[in-house]
View (cartoon, one colour):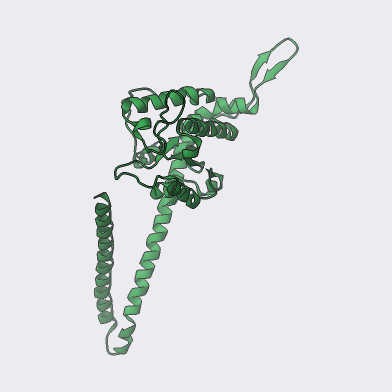
Length: 312
């Protein structure tokens, strides 16, 4: 849960995040992720069985075209109605917080819910108050299908969204593959200036009604949305590679500085020729490089070992 919340606050930053838009992100329900995590811990029952599901993380979004085709106000209305729908199904007290991300290619929201049973008797009272029961909401393919269908009818439809195809054979595309495809197909969109001129939408003998700004946007946007997203993906990937290169340079400079410190003692050997000093430096450099590589390997082994212990 703590790891998931760190991801929800974009820590570390994903490669497709635009740092200039980080200020547009929003946390709803709590003032900070630290406060949200503590609220989640406090909301759990005293005893939870070993394999009990303590929290559900819902991802609320839509296709890139649908989300980016909405105004900021329309996006907010859709996301906030989604929270209300989850509160209705899970109980408002069990919805811990929601994190809206607007710094990635497609605006989306993470919602954290503690899955206390909401099953009620004929009088409307909870049958199992205080009991965690994730299967009641997500248990099996049929419930998951119904969940998406109900959400599309009760929330999505009011915001011009349609449910995805049921029993689709579509496969998930990894972020790496998406960037590879985007880089290969990216191009600068070419749209003639005449396309941006307001068109007549209603005409009579005495007057003419022209498109407004929003109508022009809705007509033009689909024509270059995919190309803009591809260019954005390439830009974010380039920034990520630049950051990685800067980190590698800093490590190399640190290693070089350490190497130079090791050679300070060579000044005590005035009779050593420059060629002999060069040979000694190359040998020492190779030893230091191997030592750094061994340290990295040992670090990876410790991480793998810790991961295996946690999985047990």
